Image (cartoon, rainbow, N blue to C red):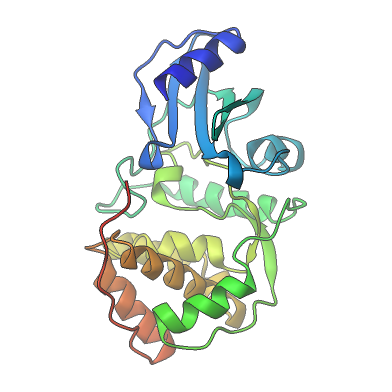
Length: 273
C-alpha cells in the first residue's frame, strides 16, 4: 500500500508531505500532499471491482450540491496490480479532525455547537435531491438479515432518498462540518442516514438524544422506523463478525424496544484481518 501511494503520487505529479493515515482493514492509505491536497489510495480485489466506476466520489463531484460540505475531487487515477485494482483520489485537504478517528461509534460527547447540527440537517436535505448512482441496502439483504439479526420478518422498503450511506462518527469532522468518504452514497431507505448516526451514538446518551431531536421529523415516522431497524440489523450483523463489543447490548436493547422481539443470541467471531 505504501508503494501504491508513492506510485499514485508520481503519476498525479505530486509529493506526499504528511504522516500516513490507514483506513479500514488496511485497504486504504492516505497522506497530505504538496499544494494543500490529500491523496488517498484504495485497494480492492479485481474480481469484485467494476471495470468502470459509476459511483463514489467522482460521481458525487458531478451530482451532489456544493451545499453539502465535502472534500472536492481534483484528480483520479486507477490501475491494475495483479489480482487487485488500485484507485487513487486527489482531494481537498481537510484540516479539522474527524470526531471519532478510532471507530465509527462514539465514546464521548464531542460538544458540537448548534451550528454544526444545523449544517448537518441542511446537508442531508441538499443531498436528498441529488440523482443517486445506485440503490444501497437492497430488499434481498433485508429479507435475509432481519430474521437472523432482529428475529422478525423484514418489512418492505418502499421509501428511499439519496443519502450518504455511511453516516457515522469516523466520517464527520468537528466544526466546521465536513462529510467524508463518499464510496457508498446512493438511494438509501428513508431515515437510514440519521438512524445510523443515532445507533452509533448509543454509548453517549446525550448525543443519541440530540440526534433523535434533530431528526425527529424523519426518525419518528413509519418509514423512518424501518430505516432505524435496517441500521440496527446492519450493526448487529457487524457484532456477529466480532465488532462493536461494547455497543452490542445497547443495539440489542434498542432493537427489542422497537420490535418487541429479542434479537437472536450471537456468538461473535474474531474480525477478519
